Every structure is written in structure tokens, then in C-alpha cells.
Figure 1 (cartoon, rainbow, N blue to C red):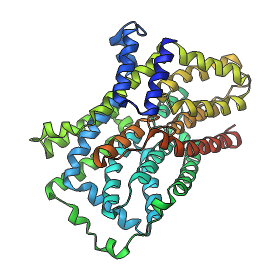
Figure 2: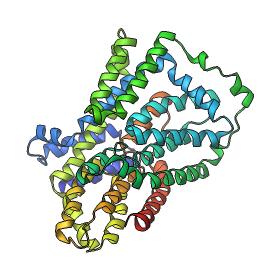
Figure 3: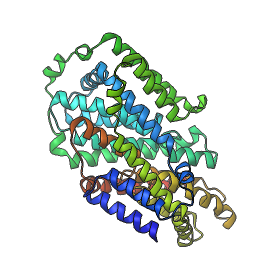
Length: 424
């Protein structure tokens, strides 16, 4: 009860935004520790803090801060603008589709870390509001991440537990992911019709020279090399048996060595340490729900409610996983549900002989649900932190939820229909 009270009270503060979110998360986590929710504080940190995510963020934030000085993001922005220059809607479609595609190939956090500066460079050159583009890219990163095993951490866990191959997973999850993306794009254009309905001066775009963005030729070519190396390492990280965090830290500090070795302290100041600490606190608070058995009890409750029906369990799994993943980190939640799903074969082997529909239902619910709130997924937090860092602009919790909830509910309903008609 103490854990649940601290968690719900902390989330209330996060939603109302009365107190800085980093203060809320760290105080919530430390109060849980002080009150004895965890027997061993060091073990709690080891078990529940996803250091892979935290180091990934640190390394990529350093990398982005270093290479943006070379003008690479402005260069990519001009190239993108020339490709999708007809109007605001086409530009929006082009950017969000590219983000979704990249999120299916590499981690969605890395995708937004690379694309947000490019997007801001584009909106700056056009003198338009970046908020609709950033919001759309957040949605697209999480939707695109549902398509493949490597797109989102829950998918890696699910594929490992279920023994699903990359191609098999993509064949089943890919089609609904891109359908969900299209629905999201249509809805967001309706939401932000006025802000995206601008015309782009074609003659002005023709006058844009990508080469003018290059501030330092040597630094520019080194930045290109580092960016390509980063994408290569992330795409083949499983074959190379490397963690995302290892790649990010290596690339971040290699960029520092090659491009900014005399400005280390200045670059480190640009890291969003508030976001890093927020993640730390949030992982501990979610760990409290795992430690006290609240998440486990809830999942067994779901089994009892669904009864012995593959169809009803799959539908409920999509809805519940989607709703909870908007407020609770989807990694521990997925970890809690995996053994529950595995257990179904022993509870009723006749009905649950093939668990594949349930694995895909869990993936769709957990990944899509992250779009519900600004803190529902790592990519959301990082993208909004970069918007604050570079433009000093914010999307309020309730404003985000107002638009995102309609998108997520539409996506979850579509996903449920897809599972019902295609996978079961």
C-alpha cells in the first residue's frame, strides 16, 4: 500500500507538473528506499535501473552535441526539405515516415536523438512551429519500433522468450505497424491542420544550398563517418554481440576525441542530466511495484478475468498492456507478463497450445501504449527534453495526452482487429 501510494502520488505530481519531474522521480525513489520497500538498496539499483538505457542516452547526447557543431544536421535538414518541399503536409509525412522506418531498424531513442536536431534545423529555416513535427516523430518512433524485434526493448524480450525469428516477427507485426503509422499521420494532420497547412516557397527552397551548412569540412566528413558507423553498429549489434549502451558510449567519446577533445567540459554540460536522473528515479519507482508483487498480482488477476479463451485473453492483453505502458515503464511490465503467458500452456494446453497471438498482442500493447503520455516511453522523454534544450519550448502533460490518447486508442483498436482476423 505504501509503494502504491508513493507511485500514484508521484504520478499525480508529474501529470499536474506542479513540481519539476526530476525532483518528483528522485524523491519518490529515495522515499521508497528509506521506508524499506527494498531490502538492499544497492541490489535494487542493480535489479531495476536499466543502465543500458541510461548509458545509451548519455553516449548519444554527447554524440549529438559534438557533431551538431559541424553543420551535419542543417545539411540533412536542407536535403530533406528539398525532397519533401511541396507543403507542410508532405514534409510532415516524409519526416514521420522516415523516423518510423529508422525506428524499426535501430532503437527508437537513438532515432529521435538523431532526427530531432534535423527537424529543428528544418523548422528554423522555414520559420514554422516545430511542435507538431516533434509530436508526430515521437508517435512515429514508438509505432515504427513495434515492427521488428530490435525496434523496441519489449520486442527483444518477447522474441527471446518466444523464440521468434526476425523475419517471422516482421511479417506478423510489420503490416499493422505501418497501418497504425498511416492512421497516426492522418489524425495528427487533422489535429494540427492550421500549423501544418503552410505552403513552402519553392523558389526559396531552390536557393538553399546544402553546402552552405558545412561549417568545418574536416569536421563535417568525420561527422558523416561517425554517423554511418553508428547506424552500422546499431543495425548489426546482435551479430556483433554489443549492447546499445556500449555502442553509444564508444561513439560519443570517439566523437569527442576526434572533434572536440579540448571542449570536453563544455560538451558534458550540454547533456540533459535532469532527464538521466528522471529515468533513474522512474526505474526505481517501477521497481517498487515489481518488488512488492503489485505487478505480478495484477497479471494473475488478468488471467482470472480473461478466462480460458485465447481470443478474450489476446484482446484484453492489448488493451491492458497499452493502458499500463502509458504510465509504467514497459520493460518491467513486459518482463512480468512473459512468465504469465508461458504458464498458460500448463494451465490449459488445449486452448493455449500456440502462444504466438499472445506474444504479438503483448508487443503491440506494450509498444503502442508508450505513446499515451510524455513519460510513457524513453523516446518521448528524450525528444521533449531536446525540444526544451534547443528551443526552450514544452508540450504540457495534459496537452500531449489529449492528442495522444485518441491516436493510441485508434491504434490499439486496429491492432486488436488485426490480431483477431489475421493472427488467431
